[in-house]
Image 1: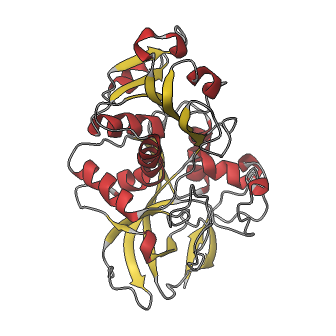
Image 2 (image 1 turned 90 degrees about the vertical axis):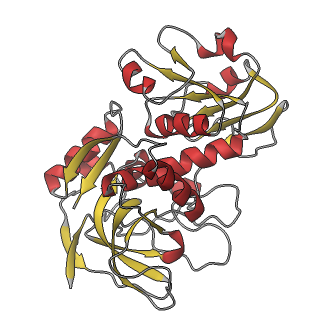
Length: 339
């Protein structure tokens, strides 16, 4: 049996890639795996970064050829030997990322523990195979597009906030309230009982207002590190790679506070390396089914809103348009390929 997939044969800029879905052999579910018929796959900045070879020096696996894409929602087509939690017909979703086995952070290939390494990426295809222990069931109330759009960014936000120690009564500043991670993180932090401040521009202000933050700073008009409301804040979560974000955060984070960035690495990778901070480091998500389950449950209950900005067909034009939207820096919500 054949299927259509995007196939990357060499690591180079996405604009020079062939984004035409091509015929390849349909994968089969091995032991401990599930075969998913893809209904929706979301784009993330990491797609074009990996495709361009930017993560090679960080030690990330560089399979060639490979099928890109990390977020998926679909229907179980078949299960491999030893899989009892899923059956054909189940509606599921996942982010195909390194499994959480207690390591500090993850990457796009399994990077810790003794588990058999799962396939890398693979969701921009009509079918994909994933280890069953990375997959969550999708409630019927949640659309395939929402579930696909939630997995990577929701997990990133939820884990980032937990890493920062955000909880009831804490104050957190989330840089980038219009970013996919930022918009979800504001909502999640509010549900945790925290005071939430975030940043926006005039262009994104109305959209960011929908995330429920207590305070929104227009970063084009005001320097967030000079806001008197944020003095002695507990935590800063940089979701956008703010210029000099860590240096500026030092001016407002209280002694023993925390800083996490998911896109700027100037803070480094050693959480305890910075005097005055309980935790300050770059962070990258890990696949964690419990976190996926918690998040999709919040969406089903109406406590978390995933904005799907645009849906694109699985054609050369559709995928090209999806990457164009994703890399424009103007999206407010998720860009999702539908099958």
